[in-house]
Image 1 (cartoon, helix red, strand yellow):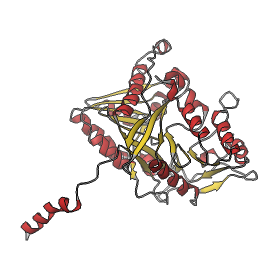
Image 2: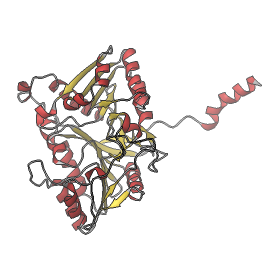
Image 3: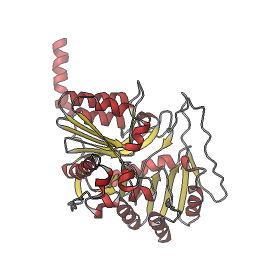
Image 4: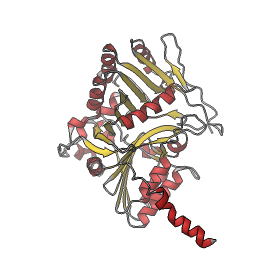
Length: 406
């Protein structure tokens, strides 16, 4: 009987055929536990991170806003995978924002004590007046993860996040150039930063990669801030405005925060004006922002935008976890735009001037009915969810009352 079972098992691959090849690009999500936002066809962040890190053979470069872990939470296994990679000889470089390191030093310090792991803290406040806000890593110089997911246990369990896993040498090389630039900047004293020579480079774009449907997605990388990117034609703000200006039927946008004001009290017009132009030519615009914007100066601007014909704006509020209050969590943190169900931008920037002019951020612009269609379905799941609240002129939007802080 055992021989018969073994023979049948050996026949299984011949009967069902080999597994389909993995796509070169895929959407990856994190879903707050206890919500209805899950998309079963989309892999979850922890699974993808563990797979990517587990395949590392030579190098692993991570540039993260911060790293925050708690015992027995989902990030524990991810950090263990990094230790394991370093233990088998993979050269690991980790870079975090200097200011956020002061808030979350523990996991970074533990990483720095491990063999084959080098850690640097980068002060983008001193460099450009902002922060290192990107969230990405590169495996063996050929595979990239980029998205809204911070390296935070809450981003894996209690926050709605979207990212992209991309297996492409050209994308990895472009992001690698950014990483290496920041790695050098992180080692410089403040007085040497302004004199640092930025090498200009024109990247060959767009790039064709295979998506999950087996057809081609055409993509190119985007970067911020403008003064610290090798190719200014790939600036995030420019790419986003061009995407919005190219829309003919529909636009779906989701950000943690949105503000058409700058920090000096002036108006930040680039994206806000692009949305108004789109609505004026008949494009149906829908935008979701998180309820963390309630009670802030952004509310009057959101109301004003929502008053425009063809524009709808909504808050979403993720309910507190049944197991207790979790600070800095239970929110939709995604950052993406879909135009006409065909083109998209997905990145690490919120929709405020500082993210494009003073802070390090990355993104991807793409043309792909398959990927853009999936993002549209994700958007509509949030838009039609019980967590959504359309913004009206008469609405009053006080800050959310949080549960007991434990």
